[in-house]
Amino acid sequence: MRYTSFKKALRPFKELFLVSFVLTSVFIGGNALVAGDESAELSTGLSNFLADISEAILPEREPEVIPVQSLSLAMPNTNIYIGTSNRITPTVTPSNATDKSLVWSSDNTAVIEVTSGGIAVARDFGTARIHVQTSNEAVAAFMDLTVIDFPDVTDFEMTAYVFDEPVTEIDVGTSAKLKLSQVTPTQAKTSGVTYHSSDPNIATINADGVINGIAAGDVQIYANFGPIEKSLTLTINEPLVPSILPDTLTLDGPSLGYVERTIQLLPNFGEQVPTDTQVTFKSSNTLVARVNETGVVTGVNFSGLLAKTVVITAYANSNPSVITSREITIEKVFPTAVSLRVNGTVAAGESLAIIPTFTPADTSNRQLMWMSSNAEIATVSSAGDTGLLVGKFSGTVTITAISVMDDTIQSSITLEILPAPLFSPAQWEAFLMFIRKGIGHFTLNMLNGFLGFLTFYAYVDEKKKYRDVFLSFAVGVPLSAFFESLQFFAPVRTPAWEDVFYNTSGYVTAQLVMVVFFTLLSLWHGRAKKKQPQT
Image (cartoon, rainbow, N blue to C red; front, side, top):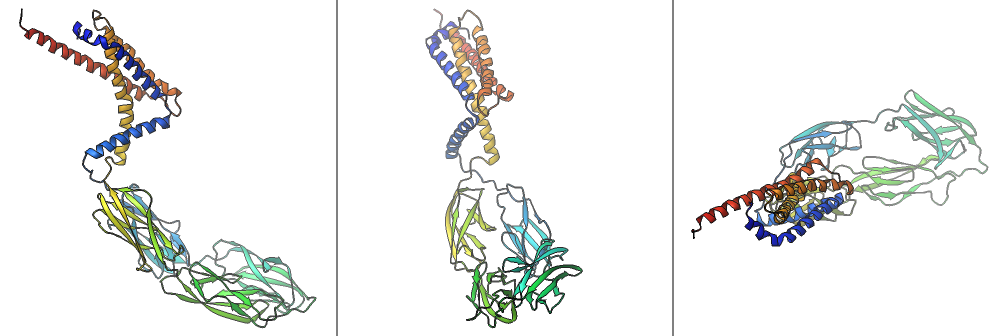
C-alpha cells in the first residue's frame, strides 16, 4: 500500500479527488437541511424509480391474498322497534383482509329483512336470526334479533293548536287539535292515549285528539296513558258571527304514489267554505304509506316488489261526520338505468370498490347481482351499496351488475387488472426505509468515504506511514456525525443516533474497503515484480 508508484499515479488527480470530496460533503450536508416532507418525497421518488426498474426486469409476483380469519357482528341493541331499521356493524379480522365483502341473509324475512349492506328492517313482531358470511363462505357469524313494540309513555305534556298556533280558547262551532310534546321516553308508543272532556256539553274530544266547541264555557280536557293523566283548561267562546260548518268534503290529488316520494292531497269543501277548514288525515296502513296533518302522503319502503294500496281517510275537524277517503296505490321506484364507475386502479391481490349510479336516483332497491367475466382474473361480490372487485391475476376482466328489481337493467365495466406490485405494503415500507437509511445515509457516506480516502492518499507524503488513513478517519468520521446534527436546523426533522451510526459506518466501511483494496494491489504488485527477469 505504501508503494510510491501508486501515489505518483494518483497525484495528477488529487485536485479532482478533493473537489469531488468537497462536493459530495456539501451535497450530503445540504440534504440533511432539507425539510422532512421534501426529504420523504425525494426518497419516495427514488424508491418508485428503483421499483419501476425492478418490476420491468423481474417476473410478476404472486399476489398476496389476505383471507378473513374471523367475523363478528354488533348492534347497540338486539331489539328492534316494529317498522324501524337498524344497521348491523360487522367487524372483519384482520382489518387488511383482501376481500371483505359479506353476504347477508335472514332466516325469517317475514319478521326481519336484511339488505346487502347489513341493514335490518323490522317487518313484524317476532325473532329472526341474521346470518353473514364471507363471499367464499369460509367464515360466518350470526345474530338473533327481536322485533318489539315501542315502550309505554312515562311522562308527557300537551297543548291545543289551531293549525300551527297554540291556543287556550276557541269558538263554538270550531275545533282545535290536542298535540303531545316532551314524551318520555322519546320513542314511546303514543297510540295508547285516551282523551276525555270534563263536560261534553261544552266541548268534546275524539280519539284523534280533535276538540270541538259545543257551547260557551270553560272545560278541562284530559289525556291518559294508563294511570298517567295530564289536563289543560280550554275556554269556548260564542262567536261574533255564527260559524259555518262543513257539509261536504272531497280529496283532490293523485291516486298513485311511490316509495319515499310524496304526493299532496288537498281537502275540497265545495262551494261553501266553512269557518274552520282543519282536517284530520289518517292512513289505513302506515307500513305502506304515512300521511301528515297537511295531507302529504309518503310511501314507505315495504317488503316485496308488487305495488300495494292504502286508504287515506280525511274528516272535517269541526264536523267529524263529514268524512271522505281516497285509495292510493304505492309503487316501488324501479330503475331505468344503472352505470358503473371506479376510482383508481387495482392490481392482483388488491381490492377495488365499484360504484353504481342508479336512474332514477331514488330507486327503491339498490341491490345488485355482480358477475365477473373471468373469475381467475378477478372476482366481484356485493359490499352493501357498492361492488367489491378482488384482483387475482393480471389481465382484462368485464364486471356486470344486474338490478335485483329488474334483471333487464344491467351495466358492465371493463377493467385492467395490473400485475401484483413488486412489494407488499409491509415490504414497501421496509423498502422505503432501506432507501432512506441504506442509500440516503449509508451509501452516500460510503461514497464520500471513498473520495475522502483517495484525497488524503493522494495528498499525504508517502514517507509518513499510515498518516493518510488516520487523517481520512479523523476528518471523515466527525464529518459524518456532523451531517446528522444539521437536521436540528431542518423543518420537521430531528437527528437520530441510529442515523449517526449509518453515516459513520458508511464512511468507515469505505476506508476498510480501500485499505483492503490497496493491500491486495500491493501484494499483487510485489509478486509481479518478483516474477520479472533479473538483468
